Image (cartoon, rainbow, N blue to C red; front, side, top):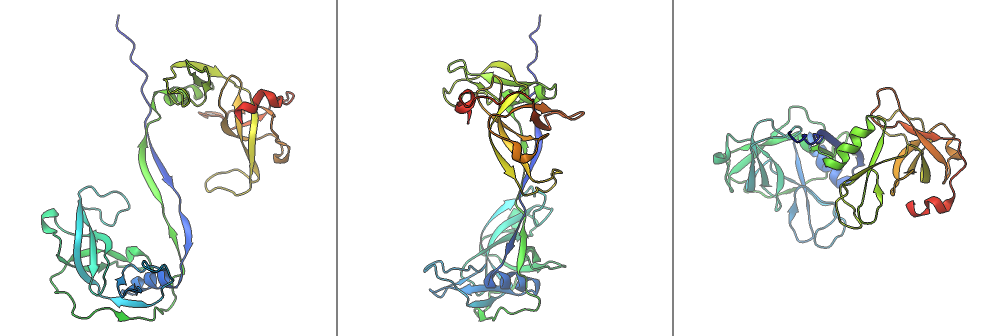
Length: 320
């Protein structure tokens, strides 16, 4: 007789992104507007150094700085690293170097992509120039990348600039995004698979006997593996909750709505879920609720009141 194969551990691509709008002050606004016009601006610090990209506060004194200067679009590589597997959204789709480039007239270096045929073609001290994007909107991507250049370093330094442009850029949308492959591990794989069967399964600590839902694979209190699986619920008790008044992007739920911590019967840890089937201002601690599943859903869509009397505070106070 052969032993049964262990269940396959789940794996799935996951994207976490948080785009947000940022307003720009006179320094950053002038810098990005300048890039749109093929002008690279820096700022002069209290110690006389020219900082590119410009900062809004002096790195030495922490005082606000406003003295803008223009530097050249040529410069020298101070250090670099080869990127042989560009990721989506990076400046170039073919292998390139990430390089710190000190532009002529600047005293600090700017990080950007350097287009080169291979790592052997890149070296510290090499001369490069800006390759401007064909379409420029007032963003760091207006510098498409750097490319090799044989021009010697400019003899002149930075020149004063008033930072005034037509139709100045006053704000940007900053895209924060992380793409990775997530594996929930043995314990949460079993939890997710059980949810697809409309069951909620946790794991019990063999030492303190607490049942964790969702399971973590180990007890955070005792530090031992949790291997005994226990089915809990389906009903539970609202322990705490919050009223959501801001509508989230791509979430088709009218506001206000309630998100709550729910201690399922038999669980030693509260999980969170949305409360429906009741006006938001009638949700309360101790409310008894049950899961509501949608057709084909792999997890509860929300929880609704069971109609039972509210749970006594003493019964769930340790789970708040």
